[in-house]
Length: 205
Figure 1 (tube, rainbow, N blue to C red):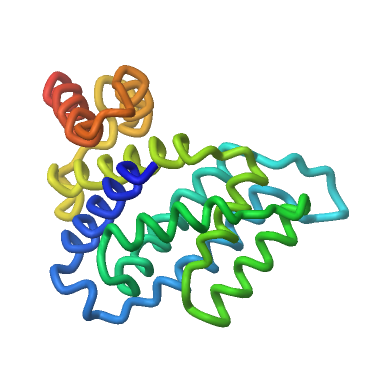
Figure 2: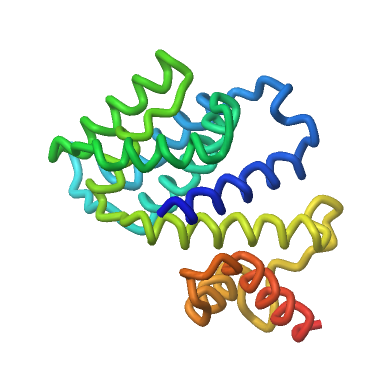
């Protein structure tokens, strides 16, 4: 678990730096991004008592992965180093206690975020448990989304030359297929995934 956390911290720092080389000094409102994502997440989970709604677990997990990006950014700003963050995350995940009411847990997490502008790791882990999102799945989904974001930036996303459709499929579909073909446990998972996307992209040109 620690190795996975360290890998994600490295990726998050690198992505933030790609967007703004001095991101840590910009005072970005990471907490605001989190609570907005929480509202979107609740819509996917369902909250309307006047109509039948079934939680869309896959979309809820995707929103949690987005929140994790912002949460890691807060942790990177607040900590004295990656090892310290990894130890904190491991400890907080072990302390997670979901209540059994996912909506209530989400509201508690959102309220804490708004009141403190910090990232409550244990409360986030409780949300993961409430939707059956394991840490391994979080890691795989996070790395996949992060690597795809890097790939897009490196291939013309900002200037509009990037093609999201390759060989009749969207890049997200290629990502899912590439992830399924790789060993997720290796330290070089992110590098191999980027190479796999590159090969698929070039083959379609």
